[in-house]
Length: 223
Length: 230
Image 1 (cartoon, chains in turn brown, red):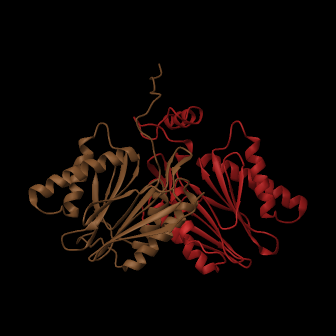
Image 2 (tube, one colour):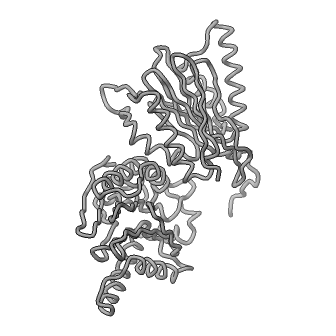
């Protein structure tokens, strides 16, 4: 007696990878710009990064329709917060909001793998990494998406962020300078684009610093 | 033991029905034992490395398991996949190589050896060995040669590095970022060790340190790495 399987799924995977690295007073968030479905490319120029608040940027890979719905939801909640509190949401607050929003749909999840980057209230870089149903953790660096299994070990090797199991609790941000962190992100995406078919075309890098937000682009393999 | 035996048989014939963890969807027979293997080419040398864990699904059975075997001084083969098939295949290959040595009065060249492995695997095309080899050797004029193949013998010759194992995706990422052409033996050892250790740290089925062989025309250096012991 074989259980009947559905022949239609509400989800699709549009591929792509995202990375975020936290520094002492900056945060680098990057994602490729390829949107694909199955083995086809839908567009080479799709931004997976969105700015949720002035010190908070989210990069998401997975099913982009769900990502867009999630974004709309978060923008609306942020607007209400601004009306009620007369200030922008801080990054840790937005992190908690994102987690709650994802868990709200625990039994029909947003198929979105997010990485949230920004500056906390002390101006230090912070990165939060999520799964599809809202489990999150503040870390020094993270990657999500189809290329994450290729990218993560190399980031572990280079950034040597201490384990959260060590006591006393050690700082998770990297001592690298902003320029070095951006170079690392470029290297890591170039390698991921070589071996992951869903990552490529162009890399969009967003750097959040004390002076504001900066955007940079780099070409990746187009095959 | 009977449980394990029947579990393996069920997984081979109906891999989709027998899960790694009870109650979850299954994974393949290649993830039964778990491993990580990588070979890299340097300047007139090559390095081949593996992890040391032998597991049965999620239980660790041995932490000093030898996956890389010497065929002759300038030829090494690492075997990933079902450990029983790896051992059988290794014994068959040693047998064939010894016969070759008796007939030809010389060692087999790595290119020849890889063709031998490929044909032995393809002999079992419709009932394969669940095993993927990674071969590294020094050929004519001590030119380094590496290759890997799938379980039915499709060769992949690469000029830079080859990877295999449950940690293969992580290994691809780490090696792609860290590899440089024409590295000297010491630098090659550092690079391959870092790539191996950071990749197995992200894979729960491989780990418990590493075994690295760096082979140059004059000597073979075998080193054991201590990493995260989990």
